[in-house]
Amino acid sequence: MKIYLTFDYELYFGERTGSVENCIIHPTQLLKEVADKHQIKLVQFVDVGFIIALEKYKSQYPSLESDYEAITNQVRTLYKEGHDIQLHIHPHWEDCKYNGQKWEMDVRRYKLADFNKEEISDILHRYKGKLEELTEKGAQFTFRAGGWCIQPFEILREEFIKHGVLVDSSVFQNGHYESAQYNYDFRNACMKSKWKFNADPCKEEEGPFTEIPIGTIFNSPLFYWRLFLLGRMNPHMHKPLGDGVPVAAPGQRFKLLTRWTHNTISVDGYNAAILHRGLRQYKRLKKEELVIIGHPKALTRFGLKALDKFIEANKAKHQFTTFREQRSQLI
Figure 1: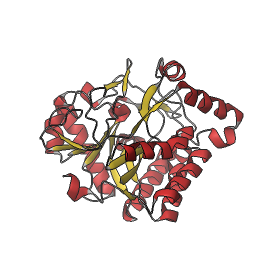
Figure 2: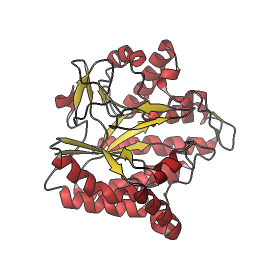
Figure 3: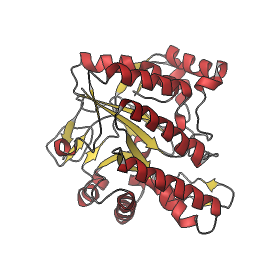
Figure 4: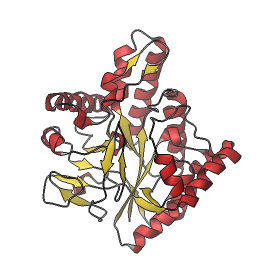
């Protein structure tokens, strides 16, 4: 099986975004050390809108100049060492401002589809171009939507083709959420581990795009009660390294604590405890790809150790890979 270890490289988007050092640089370096130990490569879906926002304000604020240099240097280093740098877009950065002390987060336009066609084209052009400056031209052909908000895709389709973004990894099967800021509905998604699509990333259909969905698993409320309790009982091991707070997701915690739910197979926090179960499930279903998601900001000491053990146990049996390595098979 091909296993993709993918990480959304970003700050938090709540009232407190957290620091670049604690949410991005330090945890990514820890992940890199694990990858280097096992001689495998990681995929970083870089929130490039934040880099562009830093670039806009860095001449006014020395602290943002330091953040910009830290991030761009790390992205360059990761790419030079063979890791994969792909496109992650949180377009609300178009509306966010820095007031000299903190980022004022405006998440009213959280999805690319909240913008008009001309704005979408401009965002894709500038964001992809910025990552190409840090890597090389044509290196970004895979997309992950911020907040998994890839729908509706019809408004994005032609611009994605125009900009050579032909692979998506935003869908997770049976996932569903709706709030004022963002929403996604993958309950009717194709159940394969990879498929072609045309205008709907959930529907298998001949077209120019390939969907490689994020792995999904069915969890009981007990799992999440354990997660929240461990975070309070042993914060040293289970507290995220990131020092921000997420954008509000009303009702989500109640849902997780009261019913069985489909969620991503993830490295984040205590979720890393079920990496082996997720892989066994995919093997039983005879799937050929497993995409695991994580966020450096949500990495915990427990999760880092669990990831290390997971790679050690499976690197001789499965292929840890990246979109970069699989490009010829995907587009």
